[in-house]
Image 1 (cartoon, rainbow, N blue to C red):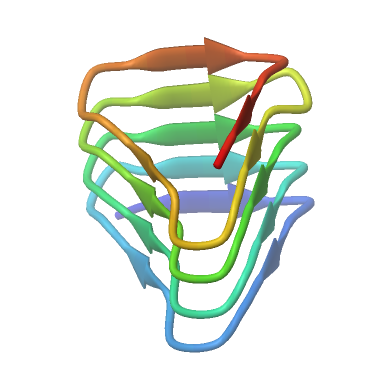
Image 2 (tube, one colour):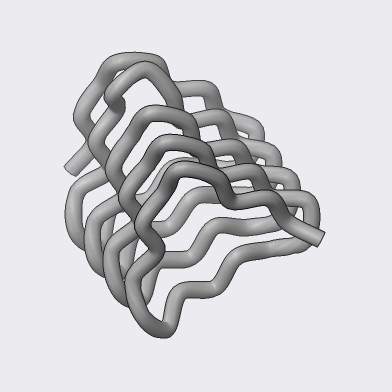
Length: 79
């Protein structure tokens, strides 16, 4: 399964198998693909985090923005 701790997850989100979300906010309709990790960050509405991606250190993925699979983001804003 996936792991969620200390986070707020919006409605109708899709959280993939093996994903980890910690101390983050994931807005409505976002997709977190399998094995992705979101830590101390915000994913906006309709945001998309690709499989195996790492989003950390107060990164912000804006509404409808995407992070490609296997990409690492640290302390940046996308979208």
